Length: 254
Image (cartoon, rainbow, N blue to C red; front, side, top):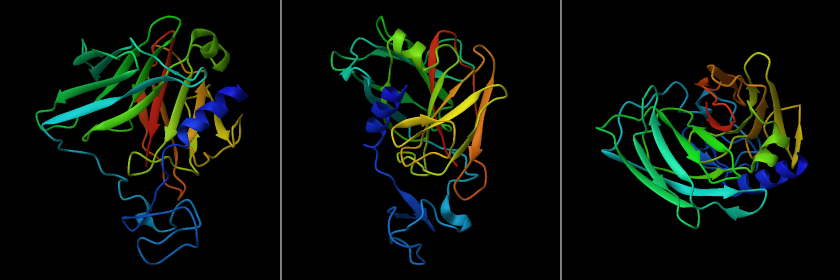
């Protein structure tokens, strides 16, 4: 488990961390400031404007959205080509779009929106011996997304938690930067752990990578994950249905 945590942290640390101060982006260093755009010592600002996205739900989107990225095995250090990627609308009976990652694990899909945010998720079906992975964004999607998807071989998945397991990242309002200081609330009966300095442990909150894990989810049932942001108020609740014999990945934001 420790090896898994270290590799995941290495991947997540490649994401630049950003923090908001009255709508401006700050770096996580220095003293708490009163002027926008200067560095902060804390991983959040104490005022209520720390997260301007709180309570905001997207209502419009560009005519087309691009969902692209790569499929990566973080434990063995290789891209996973030949993975089938499906985009689904919540409640849909069939995928909106389907493509296959190239030999280097790269993929790209362009989805017409009709000007409306997409309330959906992605399904990744890698070749054997990898486990299927379902990815749920933090909210309706109203902008292009570029993301690296972690996939795991079946023995690695079983050692991590197996059926009913989840990996999540807490993100800030930029939707591209990880968020430290988040406490995560899992469904009743589940267990939440955090990746702190390369080690998975029971005590939170999230560190600068924003990474957490949950085991004990109920496949086939609606599960809801929430939490509290660094400044106290709740993160957005995210509801999803874990699928049997697969890994769930989610993003959680204020």
